[in-house]
Length: 469
Image 1: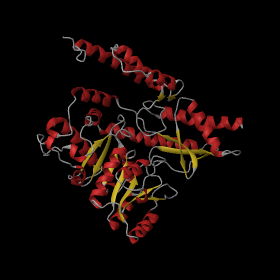
Image 2: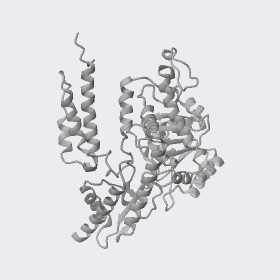
Image 3: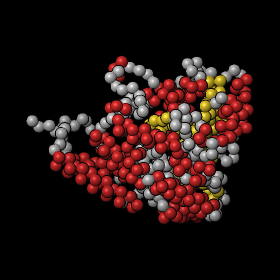
Image 4: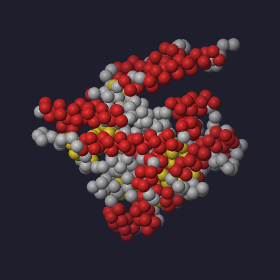
């Protein structure tokens, strides 16, 4: 009988070789590819709208569609991609996903795939060890920071408030990632539960205001229970002083969640560890390996210092799972997470770390810190530029101060001019109501040559706009 869903060994080999040839060609040409290419992108997208196909197509024909799609949009894998945080997608991780989806094992209950579940548990332990968490700590691999913070809020809610949680209040700064407010809302907290604490001129959580707000809320009969601190904000990479936050939290019995989605991997470096002092005392930590650990989108994690609290907040039994083994020396990750069915995320972390070693990641992260410092110094020494915040990690925030005209309009035009080069792609944000251009240097493929070029493009673009009046 003909079984088209079961290709022969020769057919699988031919498809695999074609896919590998494309991927190698794509990666080899990344330095020459545009950092962003939007011309014709929407027309191309429209051309992919079609009804469900009834008949088959050739693999090579479909691979060409993928190649066309990869040529349009933001080039998140290239060295000139500097607007947002994710870091490029290691080739070894792509191979890991190919293997993981090929063998297609279920890892969320340990006895379904003991060795693979242990690989994932080992990865979680590596992350816990990175932050000095004790043996009883536990964690999960998630789709990203949004799901991690959601589970973190649910765990904090369960541990500190129990069933009667509506009087609970949550404290975050005006630089905290928007996923925190979204997660808290989805976890059942009304908007009145949020306390937006202002930041200092360095854009760190203002601890004096936090203290005052906590005292006022407690006096009014509310139940402060959660404070979120950041080790690397999205806007500028600012790092809250975690040790000081922990002192305040202990006074008020607060759960401390540290958002290390972007900055957390810098814990591998000596500079990062100095900046993050006290993080080992936090109750939970978000870490996104798909950011500064250079892994593919869809790789996040949540770590909880007292692991049993994570399980207590998420465990729900079911009769149809009675044939599966109870948790033993390997965790049943389904009991620690909202997800029962999911992909085997652990291999895409384990394989690159085993293949390259932690030292390779440490060196790459140190390079990013050096590149951010270089770009900051280059622009700070150029006429007309203002850089109000020293880069603590790898984000550089910059504005140009024109002698005439509207500075907001000038900086918007400047960003457009920079990105029109297609050699680098930067983004913008609003800080204190002011338009700010930001470069986020995270990709493992971004090196000194591209940042030198970025500095020249930024300075040249500003000079051209000044000359044009």
